[in-house]
Image (tube, rainbow, N blue to C red):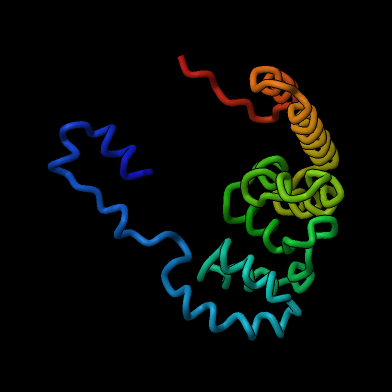
Length: 187
């Protein structure tokens, strides 16, 4: 898709400037097979299930060693997130420290898929996730509470949108959620 988009943007010039996109490996792709061989040691060291290892390899590829480094620095990070047990605390830490996360909704909706994978949209995991984010980002109590309230508003709006009968109504309901970092309208 990226190649098609760039070709479209280049127009006639695309024929003389061929894309190299399909020759560039994605982050985590280089060394994946070797890293997969090492995961038994991680599984044993941290007590991770085969499903957890598969999740981590699928999500981080050979960069799983960055998750392991977080767990080595703080063994509590090797534990699943209470209320979202398919994810490790280290993944939340990683999202905040290495993926540029600034808000809880970004963690729960984009960096992880907790919002979509758990029936309660991650609300039962919100205390632990917000504590990890607050510590890493230096949030005070007021900021943390504002982030929690905004995410709860977003989750409620998503549930309400699902109950609407058409896309336009669903979008109207969804847009009623608190937005901490609104997108700028293009003119």
